[in-house]
Amino acid sequence: MKKKLDILDKIATLGKLKKKALYKLVLLNDDFTSMDFVVKVLILFLSKKKNEAEKLMLQVHNEGSAVCGLYTFDLAKTIRDKINNYSNINKQPLKCIIKD
Image (cartoon, rainbow, N blue to C red; front, top):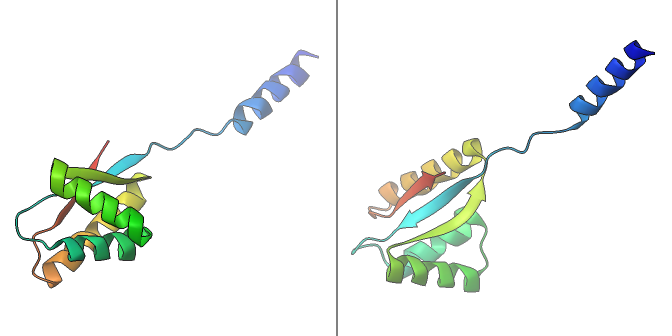
């Protein structure tokens, strides 16, 4: 009977999934990147609707930064790299960082 309970405990433990940690994707303000470019980045890479992208862009502009989403580390890193590469290609100093 004890063996049955041990097996049931193991099954119950396996059934509990750990939640993956989420990381903040943050856009940083600078004095050169156009507001239109920031909105475009938010729409292209973070799938934001235009009105939400404009609100986030204003937050970046007025407060110096804005959290644009919560993602697993691998996804956050991929999106960050795409945004930073796109900014570099377009000769814009816009930076995206990851915070935990």
